[in-house]
Length: 401
Image 1 (cartoon, rainbow, N blue to C red):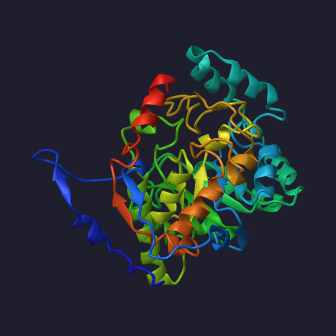
Image 2 (spheres, helix red, strand yellow; image 1 turned 90 degrees about the vertical axis):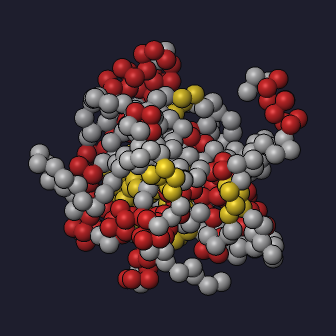
Image 3 (cartoon, rainbow, N blue to C red; image 1 turned 120 degrees about the vertical axis):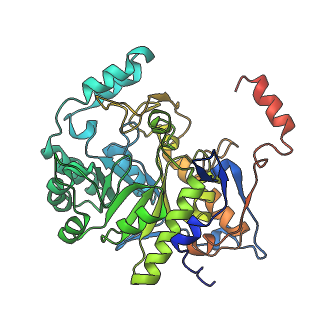
């Protein structure tokens, strides 16, 4: 299948916009509920498609990463995720690196009354990160001979890089609410992604980003992959608190266009990882069809019996002492990580056997691998969730859901 020609920035500037007022116009953006996949002219046995993901020299059979959330990833979860073919990302600014044994803290978070949760989160995250624990956590996962990624805020990334690589991490994620290649500050030095990438032999992943130009500039620094998504996570309130964000289908497509432009210009492909906003297998399939090479999932995994949060989930910016941009949500414990990733599914709502759903969607759309799946036709379909679902909707209302 031929590769689609790279889309130039001018194509975005010339795209259809609507007038918001005399001063401002805006481009329409789309989320997962507003689009649908068009079946292919040829269908393929789902067992014969290739859904693997390549990041540097690391090859994952499952193209899904577990988000660096404290309610999701601890050592035990990371080991199980790796054994199942994916990769978990450990939060180096989280509870696992602040407390030698965070069990009691996690329990306290799960049991706290709703009206006290933000104050509690701010308190428990005041404990300093202990760099010794960074190496210990990575080593503990690597003993199981599975891949693991780690995530750091930009301010501490350079200092932690050597520790992370020496301990054996498979990739280094530098993650902020919004990340750019050019950051202006008089009070502290900006992280140089060029220097960071040059100093490491493991892939550097940067995020988060939602637009073409910013993504292209980040790709030019030498990063191996980029995270797409500002505020779509189930526990994130960034879109409400700051008013910023772009729906994930449009954001993924725009960043994927930057990937194709950079590949055409440099011959080097930077992987696009859609991060957040996916609730069911169909959303994950739409993320790949929008241009993603892999996805990062949080809340779905938080609802597994393997997750660290005991049925609760909270965002990375929730404990911010000045401006929290997240909340604790109850996700319950609906199944094992194996059931959620690989099945067999015991429910019919798309929250289990995510890999099976992805491979089936690829087969229906006639895609032999993920790059072919990225060429799948999408249609704008605001009725896709409701069309013909009268009895399902009535049953949901009757159940109070």
